[in-house]
Length: 310
Image (cartoon, rainbow, N blue to C red; front, side):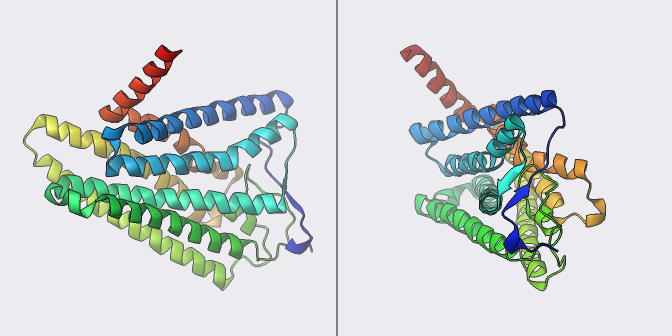
């Protein structure tokens, strides 16, 4: 039996066996990461440079783009390197860092999505109080709270996971270091400490989910009472992208981390991991930019201005 104190590296899942498929996976991951970097980079630049976008909704969207960049830069570059150089190794420290950063960015993104839901709720259901409830100071505090909560969440889960003794080798069934895969290597699958952290996270996640559902029930009730078709369309255009992003993120990440062991399989685990860690960072900028006319116009002016300068 091997203990975690003797493990110097982990073996990640090989995405393909043949050299041709490895290079194909490298190209696919490269394309997805470039799309995520371009899309999120444009959103960050547009919100930072466009003064008319200095509003709470776009402030939180900028923070969301930062978490998307962080999450995809945590997992994809290592997978690309392994596919290109035909290797599976990741150091023990590198694995711990990957777990910490991934949980940090994913948890922060979830809290930001909840705050963005509150922003939509106030703007549509309580428009007269929008300036007081979501002033610049309140937005800064909520954004800082989201990042701090994500950091604390990541710190607790990472410290707890890597303090467990590992007795079942060092091969992970995933192309990046993921807590459920590391727990499969643990000598004890049911420690009270781990169950306690999972219970607290599940309660927080469920509380945020209930808040989001309740908010959108109120939002849609208010939108359906709007007489002007143009105002109704504008309200839906700002709410539907957020609802789509929330649905994809919550459904895949919660199922990946809380599904029962009996439902676990290599292909399902791989598909879920791609859906919650790789797809959203590349898809979120497209969803938000296509549905938000102000953001789309600012990005277009930025791009055409750069082309004209060159």
